[in-house]
Every structure is written in C-alpha cells, then in structure tokens.
Image 1 (cartoon, helix red, strand yellow):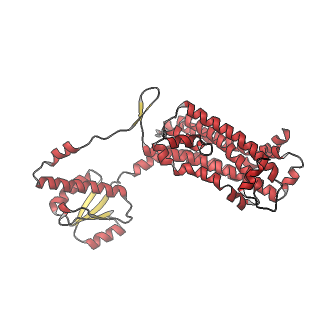
Image 2 (cartoon, rainbow, N blue to C red):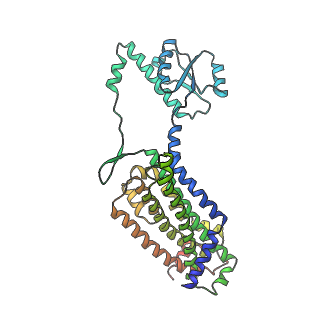
Length: 406
C-alpha cells in the first residue's frame, strides 16, 4: 500500500505540476462563464438588427407601401428600386442587406426571388417571407371581397408555452435551445476530460514500456501497485481540477450572477454541478482502467490509438444522439443508454439536466457503474500484469482480452 501511495503521489505531482494542466484549469471557468452568458447572447443575436435595409424591385406602389408598413414593425427597412444592377452591387458592397424581386403577377406567384451576400441569413429571409406573404395574402382577400382583418382574427392559432412540471408543485418555462446549449457544454466538458485523462494514462504506460523504464520500476513495486498508483494519481488531479471549476461556477451562480444581474441558465445549478463531478469520477475510473490495460498491451502510441477506438466510439455516441436524448429523455433508448456503463455517465447526466429521472434509475445507474469499475479494474490488473513487459509484438485486441482470463 505504501508503494502504491508513492506512485500515486508521483503521478499526481507530474500531472498537477504540468503547464497543460494549469492552462486547462484556467480555461475551464471561462467555459462555465460561457454556459451562463452565451445563451442570452445567442438569443439576442437571433433578432433582426435595426437598420437592416432590403431593396424591393418590381413591386407596384400600393403593394410596396403595404409591405413597407408591415416590415417596419419587424425592424426591416424596405426601399423601392428599379435599378437591379445597382441593387445587386449594393448587396455585395453595402449598405443593402438583401434584394427582393417581386414579379408582376405576384398574386399568383408560388415563390419570390431573394438575394443576399451570404445566402444564410435565415432570420432576415424568414421574417421577410412572413411580411411579404401576409401582404400578398391580404391583397388576394381584398380582391376576393373578404376582410383580411376578420380572416386574420379567425385563423390565428394560439401559441403554446412549454412548461416543466416540478415534483413539489408548480412549473417552470422550458427553452429547448437553452437546454441543448447547457447539455452540450456539460457533456463536452465531461467527454474531453475523461478522454484526456484516459489517453494520458494509456500513453504514460506505453512510454514507460517502450523506454524500458517500467522494468526498473517493477523491481520496487508490483504491477498492480503501479497500475493503481497511476490511476489514483491522475484521478486526484482530475478531482482537484473539477473542484476548482465547481467552486468558480458556484461563485458565479451565488455571487457574480445576482450582482451583475446575469440570467443564469436553470441547468447551471449546484445540484447539476455535483452530478457532473460524480459522473466524471465514475467515468474516469472506468475508462482510465481500460486505457491502462490497453496501454500495457500496446506496442506504441499508434497501436494504442488503434486498440482504443471502441472506447472513443462509446464516448462520442451520446454527443451524436444529444437531440433525441433531450427531446425524449424517458424513451427506451435513453433508458438503455443511461444504464449501459460505457454511455451511462454522459447520458444519465443529460437526463438529469432535462428532467430528473426516477431515483431508482439514478441509483441503478451508479450501482452498475460501480460494479463495472470493479470488474474493469480486476481485468485491467490481469492484462497489465501479463502485457507490461511484453515487447516486440503487436497484439490484437482479442488477444489482449484473452490475457484477462489468466
């Protein structure tokens, strides 16, 4: 035990005293700040900026006046033009944001041509489409002898305001984009740190193996003591890093946010931050044990990357599935992924951010992870003991897994 603690202390010092560790620890709070501030900024950027000028060509005076009045309510300034060449140049060089061409038979038109410099200004183009569309429909109704105002009142549908029911009573409004943004921030932080520390342990084992340093180390410690020391040392460094990040986040939530009137996203709460730390610790020990075992069986770092690709796939899978997981957190697929140990740390965290699952599911997830970590460490110890001194041969993943039976 004393020798394992010595290895743990040495690994902790090597990790925590590294410049990369310090830089990542400093950058972490900025990511947390981004989680708190950027959603509001993105919401502001979705609105049309005042002074957005759109040139309209081909429209008669009556139609143009109606469209201009409706567009002004949406912060759009319409200007009538007959010079298409000058309008196109104005779009490319400024100050025009776009050019709309209205055909002579616009009442029968199925679509209208709209040009902009990028072609991706969806907010402007969709708003303009609504303005022009309502103007054309109104003109059609007038010519058919129908009152447009009466039709608008009769055909307007009430909007839905999604709200989440709280277990203790009451409800809270839900913003899908805000939830997605917060979930992406949390799982990216978890994904990058777990992958970083896992690869760090795997490369450390490979480096010591190829440089023959491990042969000297094994004269003083047992293979299992070396394995546990490496994992615990890196794990303590990771916990220290997360402790700093969580402290900064709590300071932001409790002090900085109220002082500067920042709208903190509901997902950035103390409870969710503690869940983030919990699932980092569980995911770290699960994946780090597997990476250490693969590092012992790898011939070099390139070989380690080839052996570890299944682990990376299971880490990336929840990132690919984030939209369906957020929209259907209680679906059978979400439930399975939140209990399957290689995906459960990230998927269960997503479910907790969206709508807390039943307590038994959370406890079952943690229990399965603990059992999986214990089994992985036992198998990793066997593989580590068998492969740490084996050189000169590129073992396949199937062969490395066979060592775990010894």
